Length: 115
Image 1 (cartoon, rainbow, N blue to C red):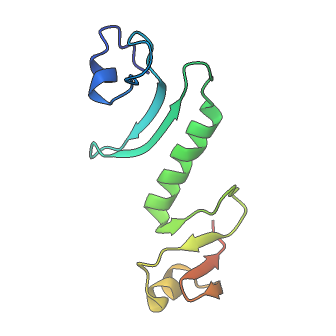
Image 2 (cartoon, rainbow, N blue to C red):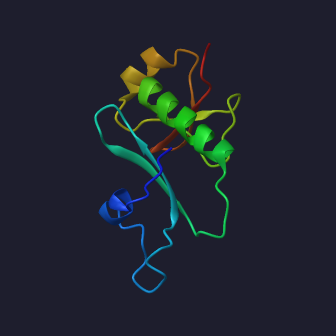
């Protein structure tokens, strides 16, 4: 969390809309990784509250996908299948997912994560 009373960050990240009151910034959430790369940006109008559960959910998924070389589909929950990254060849995927996977399309392989 950041209190930006001098609007330095708001100006740097373009959080003040040119056609609105210059004293009112949009509400934004940025997730920045250890390499200083913005991984997620959520922007809300000043009148709408933020959803911290969604922010935590997104951070959990970013960490999962970074560590497991998978992607998560829409509305994914921890007990559901994940998408195997296209960067993994079938032999690599067989090593990572010995239990197998379901191939919905050549570019869409779904697998259960093992504990």
